Amino acid sequence: MKVTVCFGRTGIVVPCKEGQLRVRELTQQALQRYLKAREKDPGYWVKIHHLEYTDGGILDPDDILADVVEDKDKALVT
Image 1: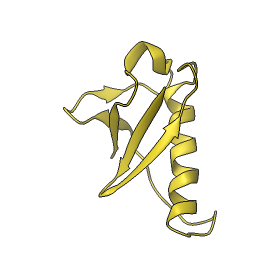
Image 2 (image 1 turned 135 degrees about the horizontal axis):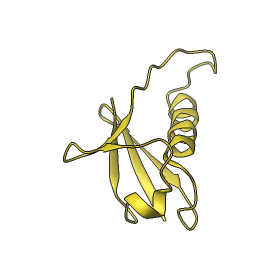
Image 3 (image 1 turned 60 degrees about the vertical axis):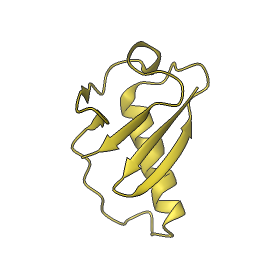
């Protein structure tokens, strides 16, 4: 399973194995990959309120990914 997390116009693909990560862990991994891709220092500040589906549904940070998203879904950082 993989999920694309969009930071504005920048999409970051995060491999999630069998989807046993929590949404919170997906958010953390996406942020690390985003900072690396944009060549920002690890101390660069990015405020993430939550992840949401492209259709507007908010993902709970404690949910297991396999329970709330499908392979190749997209989520937006807000």
